[in-house]
Image (cartoon, rainbow, N blue to C red; front, side):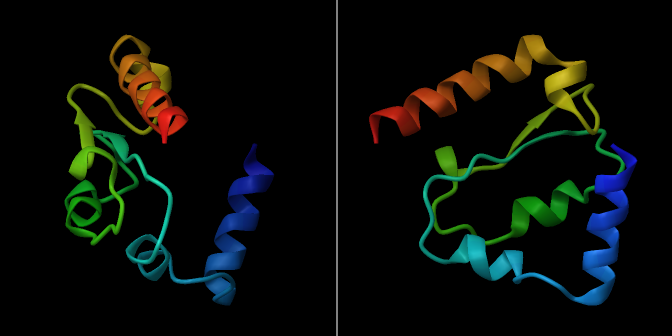
Length: 92
């Protein structure tokens, strides 16, 4: 939805919201990070270097030959990882 994207960028430009780096470094439930290695909009090297207090499996997951929406372009590889994450937080 183009409206959501427009609102998101308006909020970024206005400085609205909290610092996401500080949020993920604080006390959080498990956070899974799963990106396509060919992600055109997110610097995956930067994301991999962010300090998470509770990064699921201790790493950011990258899917090769996948882009901005790995759940869409690589569901055969995304879905099992996502299911594993859901199962792990269900047990917590």
